[in-house]
Image 1 (cartoon, rainbow, N blue to C red):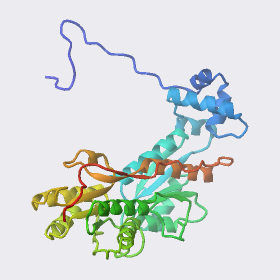
Image 2 (cartoon, one colour; image 1 turned 180 degrees about the vertical axis):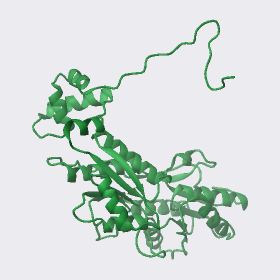
Image 3 (cartoon, helix red, strand yellow; image 1 turned 135 degrees about the vertical axis):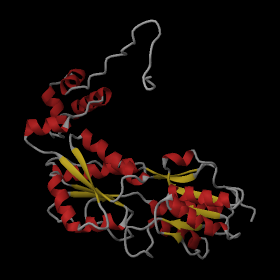
Image 4 (cartoon, helix red, strand yellow; image 1 turned 180 degrees about the horizontal axis):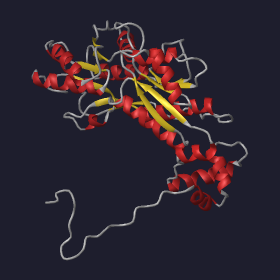
Length: 358
């Protein structure tokens, strides 16, 4: 018995519509009313194209959903356009969404994208050398953690490179071209929101930081601390910093739930918040009636847990796209990367945070 297909009674099965043919460069040329050579010049950011023509071609590309085939380009031009991404994780939401933005930008520009997963057991210098050889076009680093940040520091100067990183400390800049979101300010605003709701203080469950020692504070912790100190409140000892997942959040949430003075918790990401919500539920402490919880990142599940999670939205895909533009500027003569266009951060108000009577 076929339990995966569909059958049609009284006649042959309908084969359905023919699959849609992918748009070609000549389709774009016809739609824009230009030669295919002009389309090629637009795709390759050639400077000798009138702005009006460029916009018309770009509109046709968008309408037709045209994507240049990186393999065909390499065979035709003799130039290998490939980039290797160094990252320690591909499953956590922030990493995965950043990788998606990188892949979208690379594919639109005619580059192939490879991924090399970093592990603590790696010989970083050997891994970087191998990745640079594989990705003849350069390296991208998703530097949200200490391991990837360390790899970024060790990439040779002669290897084209760009990165997505945590917001650097004031007065410091990353060692290579990089983009980041102001999650320090976003954490400050989220903490201030909880204080405005009447909570006397806000506890923090931290993600691991990309710099310094285990006790070092990342930008989200710094923003949380700044908001409390600006309100004249001594920050309580932060929790967490041991991992990124819901299990860590659950363990820290159980400890916080035992303290009746805890009425507001900011979590370093939404996975930690998910674990905290479960721990509070098991402890019989309703959210937001007894404790308010705010997450960070606006992962896909945040809107659909119960209660739905108030969180900080991060445009990781935008960061990935803009980071690729930085690297492309290093790889292609005459290509000038546009100014960053990612949407930044926003506090998304849902059900898990509310006022307190304490």
